Image (tube, rainbow, N blue to C red; front, side):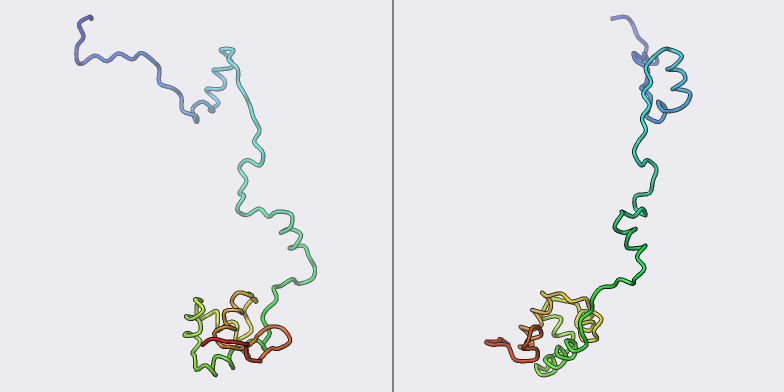
Length: 146
């Protein structure tokens, strides 16, 4: 091997261009002058903010003339829940804890602001021992547990 100083450095290859450098106008023009192939692609919906673009169904809903909204629980159901809860001597917080929900959920159901969820209504029925759905609303559940 030839004598080499520790201070000398030999580079065997040129450093590769980064992707940004390869896309620059200077690099493209240089490649065209040398006769190299240059590929140009148009990306579908490039540089669009997907977060704020709506799909067709959302746009259709926005263009609707009538006012659409979610169904809420009836005030009658809220009163039944409150009546059953008071009979069992439970606070809203205690009832919520027993069905593993937040106290605000019970508050919303009793005030008639909640969107009905059959699982939550079923849990409440079991705890207060009163039917909240069907023809027999307000009647005790058969074989209810405390």
